[in-house]
Image (cartoon, rainbow, N blue to C red; front, side, top):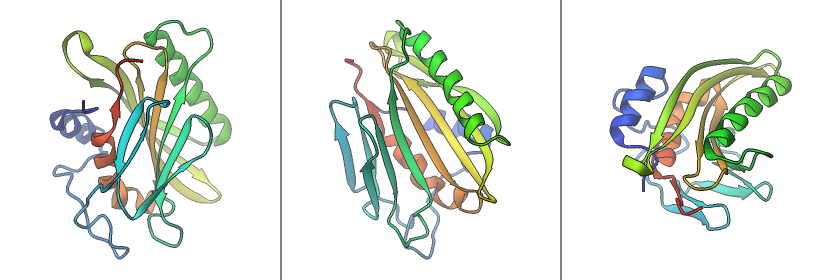
Length: 197
């Protein structure tokens, strides 16, 4: 099951200024995302999700519940990352309570890490339909780190049955954000969450 329909991607993300009208891959000197293809697939039943990513990128487990995807070192895409983290907030017994707790905590952690952070364009995001429809939240972040401006697009989705929350984030220096955004959009579209818990 796809995380978003093409219509939702075009509608909600274009409103946020995240997606271009056509959301077509752009060319660059590193050979991506020209002819963008997601030839590799990361899937882990213990994490409850699967996602496709470009052959030129790598996946790294950076903890028991965190996977980070990026361009290989030495390429223009090296500082562009997509990460997916699973969070189980303590005391959040329902999926709705879990996503609210994670969203609040995530914003606090961001503000502590980067004091001059600016969050904007928070909108809901949906997955599934009917009684299987679940709601998440997405927003855009701007911040300065080490004298360089960065942008981060964050999508927080809950599981259908368990109070586990997935934090999907695309992060890149501001001058590379639009350049590798088509890769992030394609990865988000490919991302599937196991509904069973």
